[in-house]
Length: 137
Image (cartoon, rainbow, N blue to C red; front, side, top):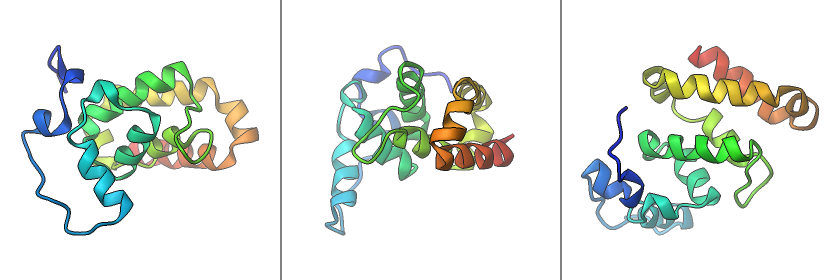
């Protein structure tokens, strides 16, 4: 997907041209996702990315941001555990990955650079990657 030059200065609402109505359910996750749709992407932190990607929201815009973060730190950590951003990426919607083969290749290469360490220290991430590779490859 080709992105505008200034896409990081916009919110998901601006980019997708879809404004969600007020949440009908007041859980922390639902209200957080609604708020994050209004936040400029340049202001997203690791936890914001983890949450939204984990919910398969805005993947066209958030996966590229996540890949940038993972290039800096493959085990980038939101609020849960080391590598939780990578886990969200690896378990995100397979339809996205079937359309975005270039990003798929980037994630595979990033993971393979760290695979020995992840296999030993992060079995769950390694297993998620094997599923990711099998489903999307």
